[in-house]
Image 1 (cartoon, rainbow, N blue to C red):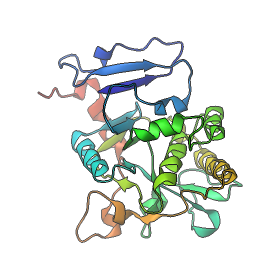
Image 2 (cartoon, helix red, strand yellow):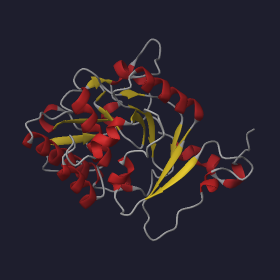
Image 3 (cartoon, rainbow, N blue to C red):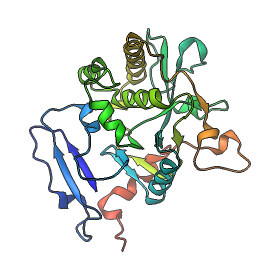
Image 4 (cartoon, rainbow, N blue to C red):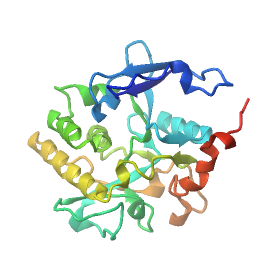
Length: 278
């Protein structure tokens, strides 16, 4: 089943049939979940009762995921169902304990003691990571209930911060999962063909994106400490050790960043270049 979270309050959602190409029947049962408030937290609302599934593939509306990549992600998650399997690994690390390069994931001018680091740090010679983005990731349905429960392990102040800044809900979810699994279990990186249509013009294109995300880490870590918990992303693992797709002989440069050449593939999404597949 496919669930579309619709949070545009003043815009009527499309019909479920519109999510399939005209020449093909819908590939799955599509349900549009119309929300009563515009919140990024809504994407993690529990799935309606009756689905009977544990695996949830969370994906942004501007992502295009090739079928083989989707299948690899499902297999990776099935092998490690208590953690997350995703296509966009990231690193949260203490500022004093990393060598942050200028320009890594946009601006890093922040007073935060924690740094949000993107592909330049993760896919480097000594690249490590400790969470994956929910822009395209598999996770267990139980984490949706835990995220949304006011009395659960996701502090309400974190959800309020997400609403106030319209950012960082994926970091909040990553911290929740890591709090339940780390340091014994790390997320899995899945390499595959993906296209990020929102790579330019989206939230992550902001020049302060890195700073905002670092500040989120600092705020969320403080909320965890108020409860007597350690920062759940305090450990990191080499990318190669938690990569689902393995490369022989395993040099660091063989592991590539998904979507690095997204804009070279955008022509496939144009109507005149779509090819109907039976």
